[in-house]
Length: 483
Image (cartoon, rainbow, N blue to C red; front, side, top):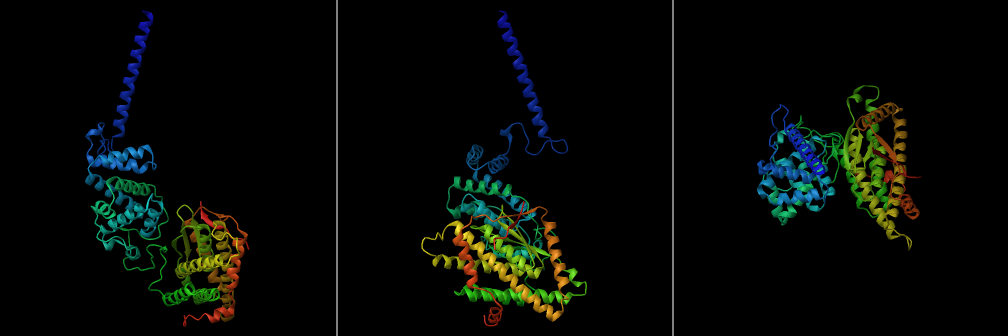
């Protein structure tokens, strides 16, 4: 009997402890449900069955979005969503997506950058297409008076889906994709998962609804080009930039490396002369201090992102700018004065095309047995080519400066040094933590030698500069990255 009594007392004690735990849990839930003024939060309740279906849809969507792909948590949330009314779930998803897109704008993202990020990070190509539809829906709900002119031009250049409205766009997208309900929800959840994980980046354009300048124009390239604050329309650079673009277009189209490099050299010479002339104009006065450095972002697409970002860094340095690469997002930010930044854009794009052409040609003429399609060969080729091209651009700059010193007596040199210091200060103010690191991709002796030969065969000299008339037309450097 004694043992039975002790067992009954122990059972009663466990029951009392369980009751206390339940009471504490109820109190904690009630505490969490209290709003900022002490009252209950909207939709907060102890009984899940009493929540409205829109709230349950929102909760399930957020739960799935925050869960890892393929996890049991995401699977359960997706199953819950399938059991709910499709119009209710779609409306909740549209509100969450538009909230996420709006938050991205406030976090420094621009339309073309967000569309590219969704395309690259999505589990399938459908996520990128749905993301473009979400951006179109966000744009449809905004007044043009709230948009900076450069922002509006960027959206227009993206050629987003037509006729998208702020409501009902998920159903329309699903019908156009011809996919079932399960696939639609998987894509919606994938989109929301990327949006909730976005981190902030530097704000280079006024986001929608901010103090925009509707009359301000600038170069904005929608789907693949750079985004930011670099003006190239309505400025004194326009005629010169058009000449440079024409030269580089010819350089990209020719099949002769020497001609391509001569045309590129002429473009670099024109830009350097423009910078020197501008510096000479401001020598001895304070008007140059009224100008401020600006920044643009340029996407660096795979493969060989390290080598390509190094090419951009080389072009930026040769053009009196600075470049820093974000390896997590594969975006490079170029900082410099407006005219210089505008030319970095077109020169980098052209040199990248020329480098790819030279790589294809080198692979075609490589000795038998050379692994020309290997990653190490191609990466080494691009690095070697970049190194050589950097030397050539520096030679051109020095030639122009030497000639200008004879013409102007060196009065422009302090202005150039001052501008360089201001660009450096601006970049360090934007990026407080940076590091330099070796370029990845391995080393291939044949690839490195082929890259040098390709650049040497197109050696730039002063005669090349005179022939390229626009009227008729070492070891790799480290990459500067964010940490």
